[in-house]
Length: 193
Image (cartoon, rainbow, N blue to C red):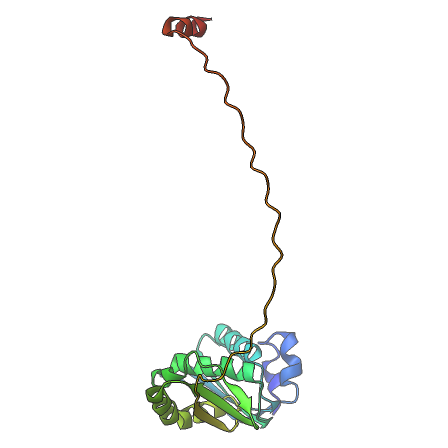
């Protein structure tokens, strides 16, 4: 069953290219007590994060219920930047994974790495890593991940940039005018005219 044929009236036409070949894994389920709609979609690639967010938002607005979209992708890897956005979304929902906050993942030998300098944080990262990988599967992301301890002994590569000095502008000074001496009675006369 084609996802686009069913949801084309609800979603913007610009999203067609992402859902044209998509199909439902199983029929959509609506939970009346929780007011939740669950959609399980099979796609060729993992959806870009902003497209995923647009789809969820448009479905929420149209149906006026909470929407869960689960993705099963044939190509399960994403760029590191996209993974970072998905991880941040997972962290918002799951307080036990807060240890991954502010850690930008990077690739090393086809493995996604999270690194820290703190031993106690590394322990928390390793405890939460299986749960994070499981949460990523809901978005269609299946990538090898590991947490590492890094040492700050390496020198940081720096580039020296010379900034040219700006010519100093001359300060302009203005001469003070001589004081005008007036008596109060002269001022009052001037006000009457």
